[in-house]
Image 1 (cartoon, helix red, strand yellow):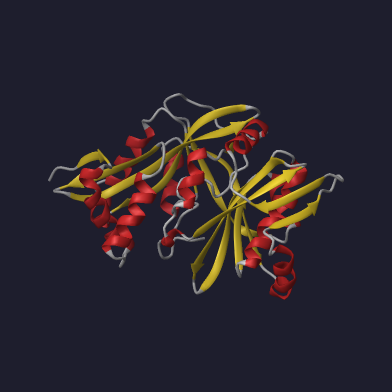
Image 2 (cartoon, rainbow, N blue to C red; image 1 turned 180 degrees about the vertical axis):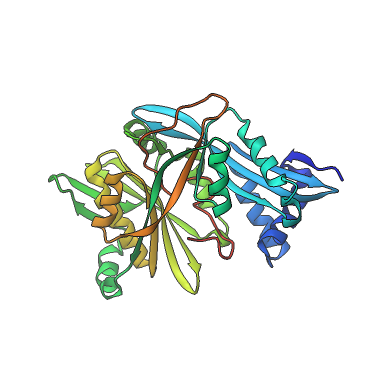
Length: 333
């Protein structure tokens, strides 16, 4: 029985559909699955999905996405791992490892976060470098304040006064390309950068992925910060996730996150999750009512064909691979 490794395309998308149904026990309609696959796998930029196919069936896959990371004024192209799965009967023959090794041949360095216990044990044996863990943050929103927050936010914006006497305004607004460039130029530690294509991509998200919204931080009418957040249902609750939050001025992080939390409350969100690795960002979340979990997410770095040196200081969020979008049962944090 021969197994071929092929890139995902229109000719083999049916094999991917079947693999997703089998590996995720999906009972979605064909139309629902088609819409999700169109968006999740075919509408992204710089994405790479590798399938292991035998007799027309996909029995293993690995997905990845290349994005820019900013660090002290420089940009670096980094590959982010996403979905990696293998049918149980093919694991003993090392097929899952085979598709991983194929991805490791790429030019770019690779960043992996979390993963199963088996993955966390495997990657160091393959030569991956362990980076500092990412802190998991959670907030249970205070429902006694909902009425007050709703009244103050019906206009769609939130005025917040900066701790250094400069006024910040956090409001619901889609970022501009100039906003994203400003944040990229101000990145002081190794951090993911939003692409302009993602503005439209998140706006087109199907129902299964949840609803995404943006909060833009302004000072004197100029964009100085951006947050991307998600609202979804899990375990019978309306939940929220801060996908990414960044400010060109560190003093703006708390006002920015305050605006995000108020919007979550307006949307009746019960619990919010976030992720950060920079101490200043963790401190800002704590100031907005988030608590740090005792559990952390491990981070691994593969140097790539270019032997790119592992970053020493990071500010990582849920903007990585498919961490921002986990619509399958049991896949949320």
